[in-house]
Image (cartoon, rainbow over all chains, first blue to last red; front, side, top):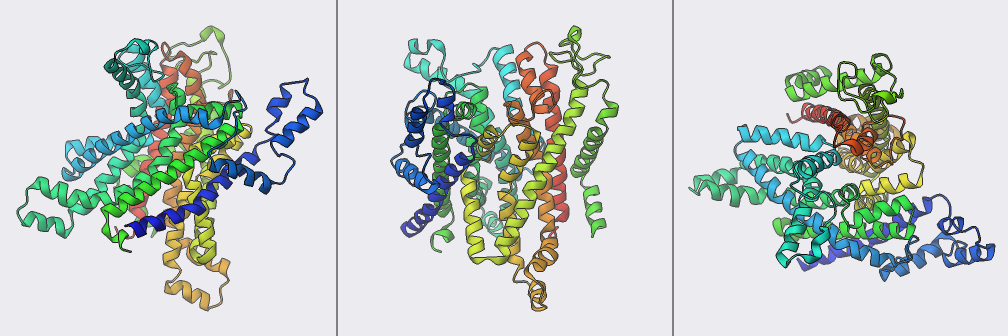
Length: 323
Length: 275
């Protein structure tokens, strides 16, 4: 296991370098100089001052020199200062990251618990009414524009019925609430964003786990387990499901970038104070340092998520460990 | 062969329904200029935000424009954007996959590490970033969606090519002196065509969703050009009292994406040699 982990970690190094190169080059694609925003808005800016800025950002140096300097700072998690308010980028991201992680982890929990239950039940009761209805909803979940669902839910549950708050993470009177009141308040704010963020993944995983289960149920070892006289519950959960889980774990790694990509839309729609909305605002304002920071952090998170998925995979399937 | 596939699809009710809806949508898009009850850009401020009626089947928007006509023209925009984007991504995905799988070694290592790196970035974030730097317009949206969504296909094609390149018919072609490009495009490509066609069909649905999300955020198709996404974006300000502005374009996206998904999956089953 340790051997496997070490190899897996070594493989991440070229990817890490690649990620920083990629982020750096996308930013080089940007039209104009990053200093234009500062200089254009200030007609009094003298040409000497402009030159100073160019020097400060090393815009007179070739790309590899700038890249090396940038990477050196990134290694210390220093992404420079935001063009908009001059605050350190890392600080801005650190403020927003917990909210985004909370949202996505809750969505992941929702996706995995709901989708696996639906998938297993549908597979075991193939062609039942439940299976047909859930298959229909899975198709809809796959094809529906999620931002539209968000819009309809906000109107239906939020405005018309007044059941749930539709924006932000906390109410205005949050400060006056008791400890439990605070948790309850945040939970209510999280319902819609978590639901909407998890929708596509839920549909995908429900479908995937259904077919993985169907595949496994036909196998000889499941028949053997039944023949041994085990209870149906043990056969399904211990013998079939555990084996169906192996391919499902790999999906986790693919799902993470999708989830985080969704944050950029949903956090904007729900005015959710997370990294996705910070990124959206930064894109709109062409705040390059913030964008480069978010790009790198997001890719790092994905990399870590993939590592986690691989480790889980190795746990689920001993053949991987001993290769 | 083709007849076998068609008969398989015809027996699959869901796939057939998808195919019919798909053809109907393409026909509607093509006929938009002739069947639209009104010009999609004609404003009539005396008829602002009027609910669905005999005169305006799907109502009018905040500028008094006929929603049905805008939706019909929007079908055109959505389908064209999706087809071009998928064309681009299919081209890159196939090319990269074939080269990596067939040549192996360093070509494979470099291309696939590049794919791994791209896969670490959420596609939607990449698209948002690049679009924000360029001018958001139809052409840029098509190109950006296309060049950011080929990685999955590249991996798929690479896997297929990798397993095919040791097969006898490829070795025979090489032994007969076929050039690399001939082996790639004449011998390998037809044998990986099935998964490519399936992935392209399913890709159309994905591209429509991405375009509508971008347009909804104001970074895609720009008004006054109608797209389902920017219609939803404009409608959301009036959603409380003009539900028709938000319901119909969303349903259009849902139906269209579903049509392509249903057909794509039917196609996958029909083209699967194991079935």
